[in-house]
Image 1 (cartoon, rainbow, N blue to C red):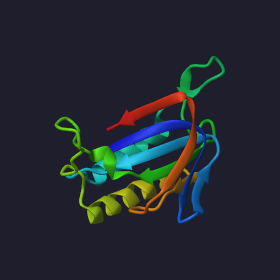
Image 2: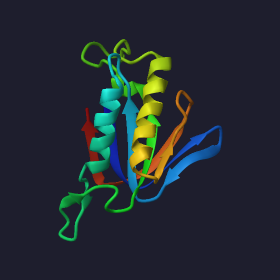
Image 3: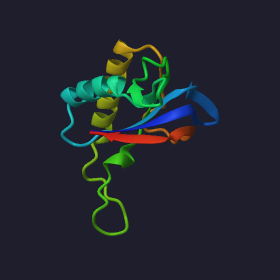
Image 4: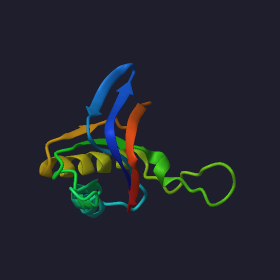
Length: 144
């Protein structure tokens, strides 16, 4: 499981011309589910996401997490994070979870984040989404 977190001034996801999720200040989080991922992974990464200190304190040091700054979280499934890219010029997706398992584990991850924090929005699993955001920093981290 790979979780790409980006500190955002704002972020939104649009499906079929309709905004289905949006946040102001907070985190845009892209989530890739891989074969072999389990609920243990979703719990570990939900906990880490919420505690990850990527926001500046009064001295400008990254000492605060999303909850401490009352930021929003926009969770978006993105199976391409599970791509194999070492060989050739075209990504392979044999390491990505099958769609049914990916959706189940993505929803489990969303539920685990929401159980600990209320300011959570999501995209729509498997949909053709248009995601836009303003990266703050830029600050981007890969959690796995």
